[in-house]
Length: 545
Image (tube, rainbow, N blue to C red; front, side, top):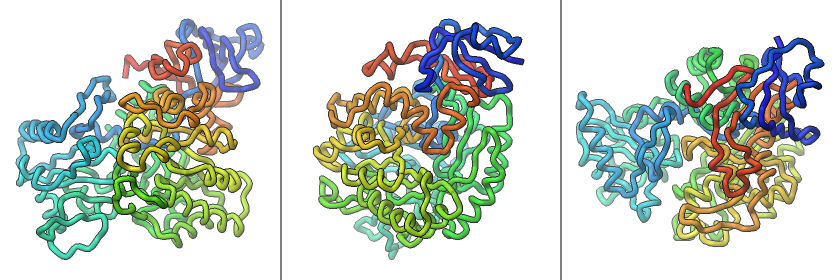
């Protein structure tokens, strides 16, 4: 049966047919967008006027986020900013370290089992004059139960003495750059990087795979997608063991699950050879709503966590350089073999030294395995300068820029991490646009909240939390922002032939908006109200999730 949706306006993101009033669908696929009389030529139809006063856009594509966002909401939120839960409840932020500890103490007081772990998330000491949280502070809450707090960056964790004891790390003689030591020669309780966080995470209430999501978390993540207008979302660092893949198949196979999920296999904890083999085995298990067979490599850490790899002049406050998360020879092996086998790879590079490593390695890999449409993507790529963007263009790479950073950490980057000049060029979407580098923008949820319209606002305005404008020349236009959260992100995933625009032959995936983004404009895009989504012709109202 053909259904034709009418709308106040349809912004198709199809440059050959940019606006329409109606869209016809059959069996979850778009037949066409245009006026009613033209679409009626497809045959008998049912006219749906539910959206007659709404604006339709292609369902937004979040090219860098994590299903973990859904699972974390079962833990205690201790972030600096107020944050909306999947159920639409506002969680008040913690504007001081004392309030973080008080919130943890309040959560601990409600727990019955004295040995059960207390997990929390979204801490960032950079908002508290970069004070480091230590195990003694967490011991003041409890010495009997293990406590662990995941940082907002996802690259650092703070734990108490009990957690270190359970993981066998409360001992002298540890020599690891990700394990700071106190004056007593013992770990301070701060852990940097997945190799030292993972052994402790199981003891503090996080899954053995900290990036994993349980069934309830996936459904909560789906609610967030509907509220944000997202119909295709990545899980951009998953280990994807068999049980996790089975869970993803179960949830996405449910007709009422409201999003398409694209998980990328994380490189950590597996040899490069086994990584390639695992991804090859996963690809045939893809379905309409679950796309498998892509790789994610994390090259360095977090800028605000001082674990990203920076070229000279290094960190503005004199902090030592950050951490490498993969050896150069392993990076080379993965890139070369992925090119040879046609496997898509996305590389996390926060610092410009990490970006340069991927550029140099990719240049050598392409000499061995030329590929004209590989679409390998640099994720975050926050500090790349113009010379690097020119190399990125030359090599056919894409970038997915972390535009939300300007709002959440822009002031700290300007004053503490990289200093004024480099803070002005961070997430240089304007340069990408001028040089015609394919680009997307993202939230990296749960690092920042899922919300492509807000991310677009960040990329256009580049305004920090204090109101400072960082990088006037790197602002992008409204049209460029809307492209980045639809076709731009879809392109980086090799999915632009299926999603990202409303046109014949693509999936019937729509963001249903109360307001017209073109009317809301550069200043008001973040305030555009989302009614809900349509996924493959199925309607999901935010008010009902």
